[in-house]
Image 1 (cartoon, one colour):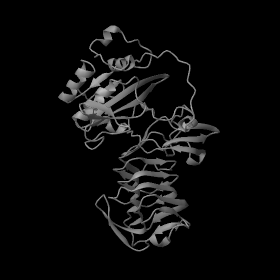
Image 2: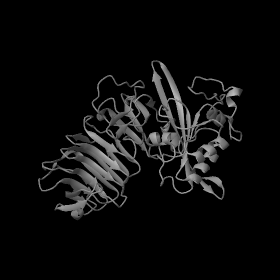
Image 3: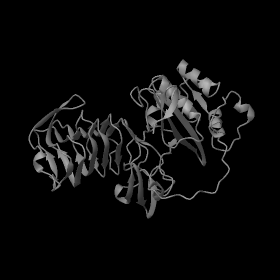
Image 4: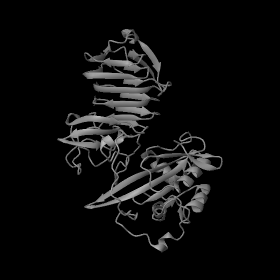
Length: 428
């Protein structure tokens, strides 16, 4: 493996390197990268018996380009193909064009941010990708064996928003990975992305590829905040965060104002049901728009914690439900409180772009985010909106609920709000 000519080769340690990993295991590595730079394979790298693992990345701003060569091992007790070091929160790691085989774990990423794995192949590996405790992890255009496990706890495996060419047409969406699936999986949009979520153990791909990666040409990549989805078998999860306009309008061009059209009345199944006056009884006043008020009227408001339920009754509507085991994503819902205090939130927390925890979004801070779910039955498509309003603590949740009432429409991206001096303040 060679490094860019602009940087010294001396940072590559080709001698025995022993490291305790975040899994608690002690690993010996063949190669260690200690400085930023681009490292390109110029031949296959076969890890000998006296090493358990292949490459340790111990720096930020590192690109490993496999150049379509192999990283494999003959070790009797193989470890990791590539490991991103623990404890330093390394950022901007890219691993591409590499064929990885015969390891216990192909790529192991621990506490690293903005990591991309793309155009790689995984063979004869117990867990092809294992990623924990990091933000913005992207895995796309890889060839993955569906019979082998994976675990990505920081989000789904997919690309950022991308402009790509497929079958002679240009699309703006997200791309996942290729699994050599049978023809029963549909691609009704003909955009090269299968209309199903593929799950391998704890690794979930909402945008699996219809064809092998060489059939997709990437033209532009956009890096929004990471999206989180988990497996859900019945409805098809649709990305409401994907770009919907031409890319030039996201790069500074001014979009012409559209001709105003009457705002459609929201409904529980997107079939245009009018919100009747009797339905609105019990819904509170003081909303910033009739649109948001109607959305609350037609949604189940779910809050388990007594204080969250009290807040919901005071601010949103009288009829607040506790969680029941038969509750699913097949109905519109406003979910109040995070996974610790709300069983519904705990069940679906990882499906949202920003999962809630005691540490995120932080002290006195709440978040408002929306998941759009499309359920298909024959030729009938029903659309449901799951509005998730929660914080890391009580003040954060209250700030998010109060700020939600001021909105004029549902947000397309998560909104952070902080409780400051007795009122909610938008976090820019």
